[in-house]
View 1 (spheres, rainbow, N blue to C red):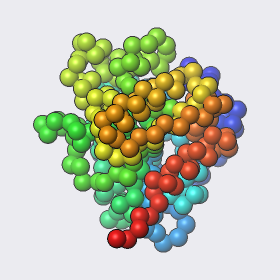
View 2 (view 1 turned 30 degrees about the vertical axis):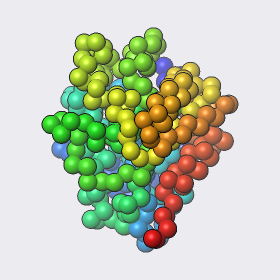
View 3 (view 1 turned 180 degrees about the vertical axis):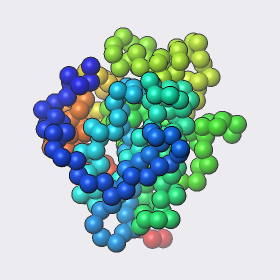
Length: 282
């Protein structure tokens, strides 16, 4: 299970006292529909990273383990909006509630700009593992049918997506044996054969081209989400015209990508800085 696979660096980070959260804000009426907003020093407006945690889409894993990432990004001058959402095992979690929550949580950044010094022209969505799947999905839902309630208003521009060991090919991942792999069927209520319409709306591979820069960072030693997930998605995204790039850190495992003290985390910072860099004025 995930807890047994945690590297020493991440365990050490989780043992530290939580850095203060500037604001905990509800984006819906359910107790799990909230986000944690961290603001860097200075007047802003600040670029924003929407951070989506993983954990096999299971209620067993909340946003606690991703706080170290949000705090590290805040220290790098990036405001972070870390969203919680209903998961499998929570009332209303799974299909379609998990997706509805993530979409609503991401869109809530447009509301936050009315209260805080946020630059909503510089927003990147960052997700790890199952959260990487949801990050790619959140950017790709613009391609859902107009009749889909999961499509959202589409009013928040996204500069790009950074998927850290992201589950980018949902159907293929769910077909493999293993602990987290089995989470796909639990999330979706069954297999692609049983629910083809659901997978058509939930699988990032089926929402290409997404139309924003896609950066996939993989661990070469990842035994939970193999690097082939990112490679397969990247190849298909580029074939369909997306600005996609996969970066494999050969000596990194699944959790090194969210352990700020690990050397692999520098790749996350580099990709995020590049996507959020101010654009020249025409």
